[in-house]
Length: 247
Image 1 (cartoon, helix red, strand yellow):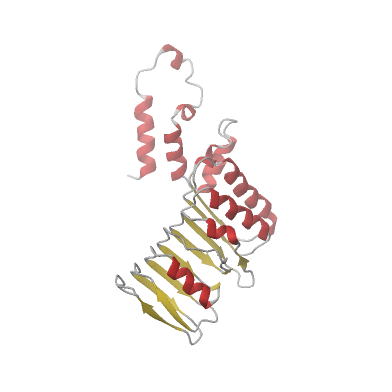
Image 2 (tube, rainbow, N blue to C red):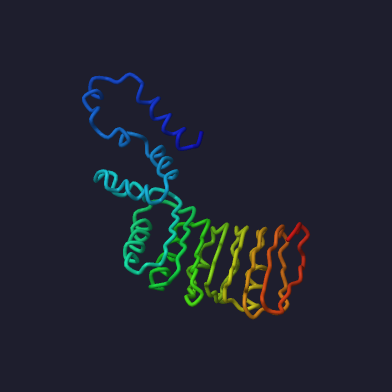
């Protein structure tokens, strides 16, 4: 039995409890609306994102309930005709979500507005995002990430595909970053070595098809797992990696 079915069983049990006269007069009303915010959030978290968003048409009270979920995953095939719908959905979520955001995952074939992505990252940096995934799957589209990314100090997992990174001078690392996945990302070798060095909590590192690398120095005292591949004549050397286990 999955978590969602468990939650629905809980709802049915609650409904079987004795009701007073006033409650009996309200049997035609939306019973889900009387559940606690915690239970509603739990249910919405277990729905596919498309279905969670569809609940906004149930009633005025439900219009923004889907924005309470702490994780948002969008897989977009890149059709330009629905870019406005996709971007406005994420904008609405960021605007109406109270509290921290655990995860935002955005996968797309194309990039239509750098400013929109910059706005998302800026908001996420202020909402304590812990897991961030940006995948631009078309090789001719590269998203250049701005300084706001490096203000996301609560990051635990960062996954970037077809992006470009330029470290700000004041970058001091991600204190809680345990997993870093770059494929393929444009970043200078010095900046990449600096990212690895300044993320002391890093345990899992994936570097695939990073261009223009020479002999990369990997200094990561908590590193346990490494996946590395390159089409060029690049290599790497492990330094101060006492916990390293396997490739």
